[in-house]
Length: 372
Image 1 (cartoon, rainbow, N blue to C red):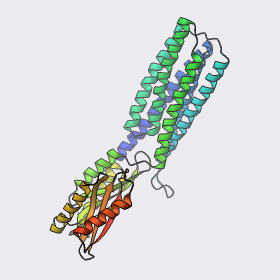
Image 2 (image 1 turned 45 degrees about the vertical axis):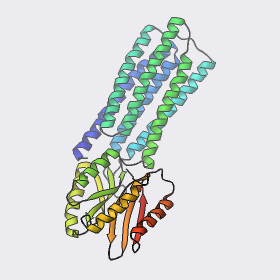
Image 3 (image 1 turned 30 degrees about the vertical axis):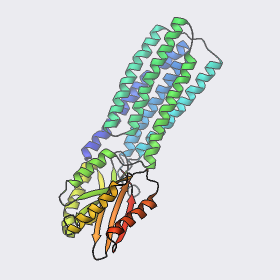
Image 4 (image 1 turned 135 degrees about the horizontal axis):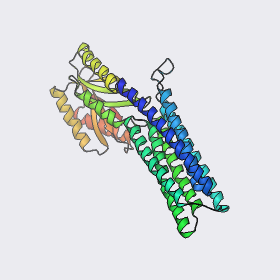
């Protein structure tokens, strides 16, 4: 991604986080005041949860600022992964808020308190729910636009708060119409909604830190640009490592006609490498597989391997196929899905199959899965 896009993304995170802080402070103040005046634990819990939203928006803001730190000797890829630590912290805050809400609601079930709700208080809560929903939708949209996990987490929390407020309003209407309080039970329900949201954000953050598969949209775009480059016959084995939402390093193997010189290969690979860095902010390293795609021996070899693949359901494709006449050896990589259990059996079957057609050749097989 170009530098201008990255600057725009950081500005969007900062402005959206500031908006969240201001709006949540106002809503929290209104809800806590109403909750205290009406002795409603559900409304007070919502207000406290809004205060936690202020903190999460602040953390998103701080995370965006820290992630802007320039690369140095200790962190040559920069500080972009602070974004995931921010999301992790936000998840913990959401979980703590949910657990505290659950404890308070259970205590109220054991020791009920009188409610003094009014229709006016419910109208005010409804108004805050509309504002909170719009803020959540806007924050999620901005988070997805700039690829910010922490911003998306804040937006999801805001949107969940709006749904919880609707449930609170229903609870209040039941009390006002039928004079029966389900406030504490609603508080229990809301606490589990908040806890689930926290678990979802926590799991997503942990997945990023552990290393999930590379971003498919980015990988597909890179594959298209690589395959459109003159001189490259095929590409495979792409691996992408992210160091924050917009900073990546990667490797990919490309097939090139073995008749080309090192100078020829350098010219188009170096140009491609610079373009990928400038347009996508990916530091890409290329591995090279030689192939003789126009040679009769290669065409025959490819047909033999293709026939083997068609009879096996777990093989997705193959590449790096090469016949080394001097070493009397055949090279091939098979790409399989994750459902394949017996790789050794597949390896032996392939070697036996190829030996029937090329009894005098040594076969070197590599079995792998896709990383993106």
